[in-house]
Image (cartoon, rainbow, N blue to C red; front, side, top):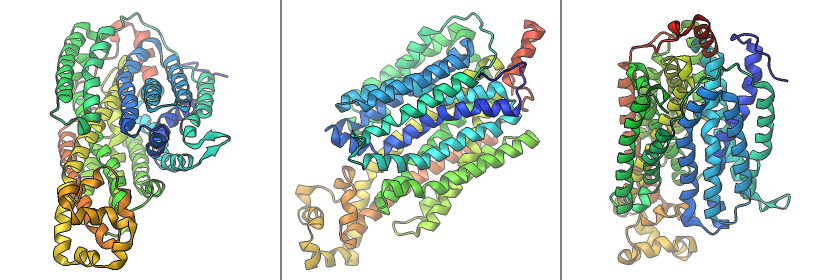
Length: 563
């Protein structure tokens, strides 16, 4: 039965009951991202569409990103529950459809539909918590949601690797369970949310900003396309230039439309009149870049350089998740007791920058894993200090009627930062790795290691070494020594150690460049956080503030905090 809400103030038990449904919805979205990433190669091989693999990710990213602010605005107008239920339902249907895919093209289309639901799962869950509890208490409950993300980051690769590695489970191909597993979890989430989520909402008459939504999509979709496909297209190719041009025109028109719509806008421009909201939006982009920069590059180091499997890589990422969760819990307790929160993104961004600098200078291809794991814990602790506080600050910077918009904005800006990070950092990595590996081979020649391997009968007779031997003996026809690693790095682990070492050294040297760029981004984030003036946290939840404003009349409505 629905949780009764006799007043705007909810008890801890009521909040936890509602939270159980929210966590199931968030778990769906968080698990799906990590479980698919470890199984996509198996899926593309089975569907004979390796060249279309990127579109499966791109389609999901586009629809989930552009629908996030739509969910936020519409839920502010019509209430959270119907849209949260709709998001879960769309996600379930999309997951079931992905299970039936017969080609990569079909899978990409179904993933796009699935992303429409995913766009509302996390942002609406955070907005609902913002409705239920005051900003000072909010960190305590949002920590549960972020803990769910941490658990999924560990469980996802393990489950994805296991399912993709099975031939058949109950007469269904193993990789199809990667999507099918979402269906029972989603149905449970749908039932729980329908039963327990019953928050009061007074519907207000509004115009829906359809033109804003359309121009927003025109501006953002090309950016997401070029971010995902630019590496293969070429950043100055005709396709990329068209994307840049369309995105620029779309965003300019979108800003004009939003200004004309005023308070009815998808993202009201007046919110950026708050220095806190503007700076936290920028900080969300920077932290999103830093977060994805670490989350993308560290697993690559573990899998390509250290030779661990995707499943083992997921386990080795556990300390990072633990560092993040502990930091979130500590931050939540301190914020609840003191009401102070600015210090956490300041210290968090500093820790993330420090971890990246240490990874740049200290971690080599043969560095002991415990040392690397220590830097990962430091990175996770810094991320935990930033992650929830940025959303909390943005929610606190707006009135209760804009709670959904503020929450969706925090999620959107972090996603855009992450998308930019994936495009920029992977482009830097793969544009430098060939030359770095070539340099490593020249250095290995001078030391004599490669020369010895080339005269070792055991090395010459081993078929696993044949591609590299041919590449070294006929460099003109094979290209640079590092060119093969751009397409497939699995051969490195089967090479003679003397031949494998230059590949690992070169790849690590390229990662060092990325680590340093991420560190620079986080130093910029540190400066933005340090120069932001803290706005005191409100003591009322969104529901309480809205009830107080309605009972007092329009003259005393909640005012947008200024800073």
